[in-house]
Length: 399
Image (cartoon, rainbow, N blue to C red):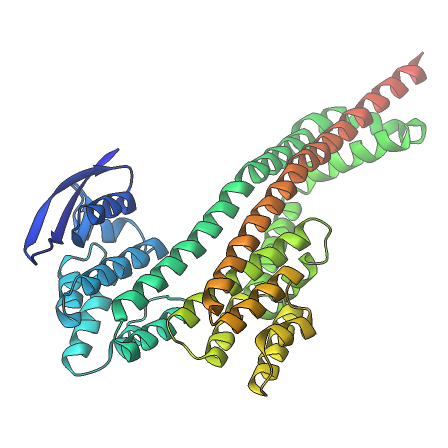
């Protein structure tokens, strides 16, 4: 638990400041909101804004928290210009402070909030701007911002869950690779003199000893090749087209494929439901929701479905014609269209897909961990068997 200092408005519009104890900054903000306070700023006690700005980069959670505080102020009746100016004066990150100051200046010049937000240079998902514009048109900017924050928090939660789930397998693989490298670098070369009897050594023993000797002599070349391979992989994933092809290839795998499909379906449904709930036109919402889809094949199906809707077809029939969802998904969308509750039905589809995707992720991880252990154990076992075979073969020759 940590102590956080805060500034907030109460129900009467009076400014309050004080301290609150919570496990995290976000939990502290939630605690204050449950007390009926509109949080203006919050930060860990004893940490100054300048210091925080120097020691770390701007994280997505910082931007999300800023938008959450701004949405809370707007929903509490604080004027837009006043809310943005207040946020600029108490922002804990220099980059956020600069962006908010620029936004405040733009608002004083008569620009719309959607325009100044777009010009601020903050890294925001595409749906944020659309939700803000819809909130301006409907007069519910605070609600639109809150919906955008909820979607951003969901996206960050999914990324965090995936990173946490892959941490143990990644550490396991890294430790295994380190063990293999250590054996090739320090253990195998000690038996390299047995290569003088190469013609009498078993094939596996000869191969292990040769590989170890080569690795000891040409370690710098292997290191350069490893760095070059890492750079090549990074460049491949840096290209959106190649990255999309990788995601499409993953969808064809037995276990990870259905997981990827369920995850993309959940993200697409949730974003579409949020946009429609904020009165964004269906065609615009469909175009924007496609930004959450990474597989080129799946994206092409959704684009064809959007063209069918533009031509006058229903969304459920268009999606079913392209095979973009599961039978349950088609039924939910069809019920939503007929009842006028399409956002609610899409939200239900997102929750179902999310739960199914998490179950498949757990299944994938349950297979990944023993597979990694088996692979690493096989590599180390092969090296040890090769060394033992070489030693016993040399002893047989001497005898």
